[in-house]
Image (tube, rainbow, N blue to C red):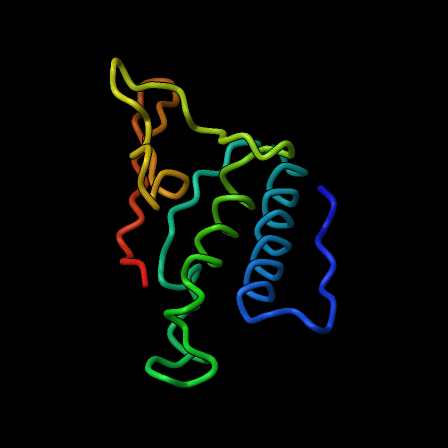
Length: 127
């Protein structure tokens, strides 16, 4: 995948998205290079800014205001193909594989592989 460029006049949300997208697509490329083409990523606090370096409240580096950009970077970098189609949308029986129509529809999903069912849950509230 082509990496995103980071112009100097980016907003905090653009910086977060660009850095995350570049990181996560690179991780997928590394795994793919050694034969792991399926990467089932689950969103955790690290993917949404980690525990250090960002602040809450009225601070200019407020982590809460960038959660949607972190979430989009995870979704686009791990859970979509190069055309930005969601990778894990195959139904599980009659049920959708993900909570469509919610902010979690690209970061929470179920995926069946052989006789195993994997479920990832994005349990982080939005701003």
